[in-house]
Amino acid sequence: MTQQFASAAESLKKHLPEEDRKEVFRILYGRELEELDLPVAAAVPLNLELKGYSFTAETENLRPARRVRVGLIQNSIVLPTTDPVSAQRDALLAKIGQIIGVAHQSGVNIVCMQEAWSKS
Image 1 (cartoon, rainbow, N blue to C red):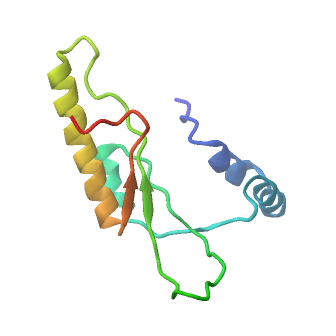
Image 2: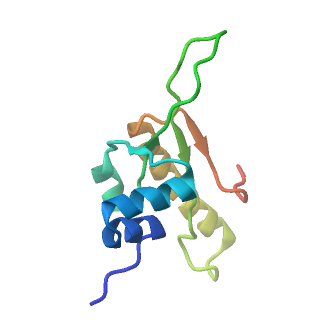
């Protein structure tokens, strides 16, 4: 059984020597970011990919530094599109609720939904 392709970044980590990988990441992202230690176990039953990175900003003169954690959610449909729209919506709302729960456990301050999200 072949392993599913996770991401370009994971493939680069796996197949490039560390020095080459650092240079590629510098070119792509400006610098390699420190990965955050997140409660990945909370994401496993929901089949979520949970990633977190730390980066710093320049010190400001007028206000103290603060920590902000932003969560980005890209979801997928839960039920077949042949099911009633209300059932599809309710299943999606339940799934998003669980994802927001994992974001909360991760200390997220701001949650960003995908562009097509609607509150109704």
